[in-house]
Length: 150
Image 1 (cartoon, rainbow, N blue to C red):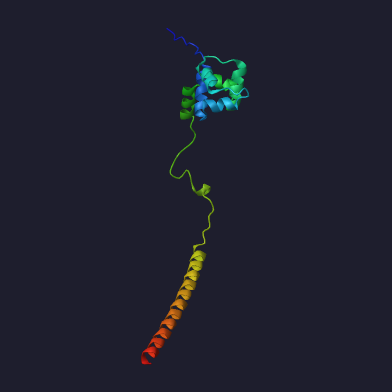
Image 2 (cartoon, rainbow, N blue to C red; image 1 turned 90 degrees about the vertical axis):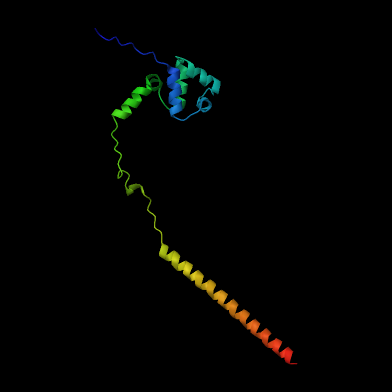
C-alpha cells in the first residue's frame, strides 16, 4: 500500500503576500515601486488570486527584488525547516568578542587638568572680589568713624 503524493497547487498571491510581509513592505509601498504604479486595492487583488499573469508577476517580483521563480517556489514551512536544520551559526557568551568594539580613546587626565585650571581661575577671581569688597567695607568703616568724631 503506497502513499500517493498530490502535487500542491501554488497560490502565487499568498506567496506574494508573505514575501511582501517578510520584507516589511505595505501593499501601497509595493504598488508604488511597480512601473504600473498599482494602488493598494490592486495589490490586495493580486494577493488574493491563485495565479497572477506573467507580466504582472514579473513587475511585482522586480519591485520586491526577487525572481518569479522565487515567488512561485516560496514555501514558508520549508524555509523555516531549512533555517532550523541547516543552521551553522553558534551562539555563546563569547561569540561577539571585542572585535566590533569601536576604538575610543578618552583622555580623562587631560580633562581633569583642564577642569582644575578652570577651578583655580574661578577661585582667584572670587578671592580678588572678596579682597576688593573687604577694602571697600574697611574704607566705609573708616569714613563712618571720621564722620562720628566730627
